[in-house]
Length: 161
Image (cartoon, rainbow, N blue to C red; front, side, top):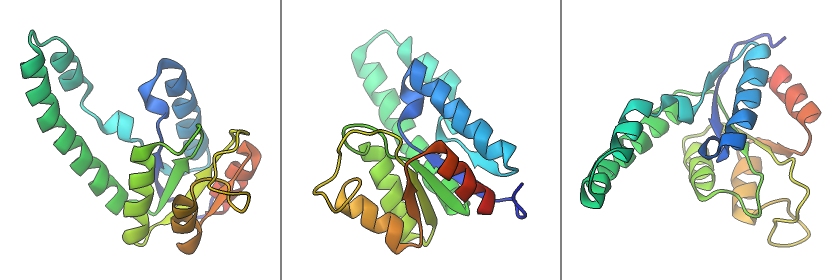
């Protein structure tokens, strides 16, 4: 069990798909089981508004509603990153998700430590000297973080956080 409770922002694209949400839930449970608080951006998003927008009758009405909601979601996520102690970034995929990459850059600029998790065995780097995009990897490691490649290593790092 961790000695100090940390607020951990969970960056990553898992919440966009039904199967991904199961993985997101497993990561949230892992972090909570270790005694930390989780800031899950998908849980912070107003699901009632998203469902309302999906039911709007015209594409123009949906577009305008999404523009407003997108801004508010982005602002909410920025505030959540500002209030966290650590960012846990899921780096799986053929390339790091663009929103996740943006959150990593923002977190680095705000002086937040970032722990990357890449359990995906596919090659996704700029060259053989990196695990993911070199700039993403730079922001993670230059801020004192690291990238782990197994759930066991992720659990160990979070327990020691």
